[in-house]
Every structure is written in C-alpha cells, then in structure tokens.
Length: 174
Picture 1 (cartoon, one colour):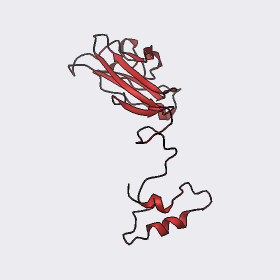
Picture 2 (cartoon, rainbow, N blue to C red):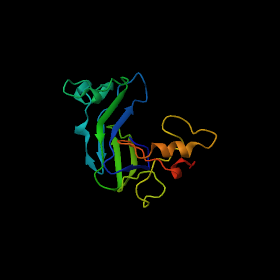
Picture 3 (cartoon, helix red, strand yellow):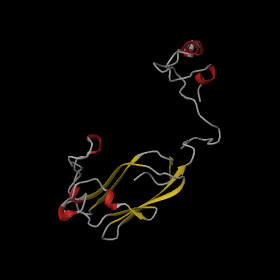
Picture 4 (tube, rainbow, N blue to C red):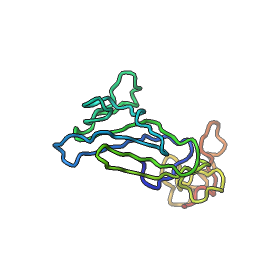
C-alpha cells in the first residue's frame, strides 16, 4: 500500500501491493485477504497465482502466468504470507481515497491517500502553473565553482529537440 496520507496525482500509476503475514513464521499463511478501494472490493483483480486452497497470493504465490507481460511478473513471497498485487493502479478522480485490507481472522490495514487534480503532487504551490527543473547543476555534471554555470546553461538554450529549457534563473540553488 502507499504510505498513509500520501499525495498522488490524478492518473499517476503505482503498484498496489499488500502483504498479510502470519504471527508465527512456521504457521499457515493468513486466509481470506479482502482488498477494498473506496469501499469497492477489488480482490478479484489480484494478478498473483493461486496458492494453497485456490486463494490468489496465498502461501507466498508469485505472478508467473504465461499471459502476463514480463514487467508484471513477480517472484514468490515467503510461505507464511498471503499477498495482493495489482500493477499500474491509478485514481481517475481527485480527492481523498481509502484503501483497506482485511484478513479472515480480522486483522486490518487502512491508508488514506490524497489525489491532487492538477498533476502537481507534493509541490509547495499547486496554483503556480508548470514548474521548471529545479536542479542547480547542468544535466551532465555539477555546476562549475567559478560562476560559469549561467553562461554554460545559456549555450544549451534553443537546440533542436532539447528537452530542457535552461535559463539563468534556473541555475540558482533552491
């Protein structure tokens, strides 16, 4: 799960991964893992293989199905765990969202996530418009100590297919 009170952008993809661990490492894995997002049960979207008893992700099962793209596959977890994995999950609308997980024995976990509407998650001033790259050095090394940074950065401006638009103001330390 993302950290509690995390801030994400609308459409920002992340892997929703939940692990329920048995109290005793030699004991059986927790059973009946249920995952809800904003009160909607998403348990069936688990991409992990069925484990003991046919429950997806039980007993540390991985994601090895042949139909999965290679980047979606996952190795097995420890045998005393039951896991949930949903790749490339994203919230489509801004606001506060709740992710909850519960096992059959009553153990629960809950996080609240804020989703920012403007795609400016984590920035100090969300109303300031597009942000430029705030790194105080050139893209291929640290800033020279003798004050040449602004002259070197100005030479990069205007190049065809150049993805960074450096200006004198963007070379100062933040």
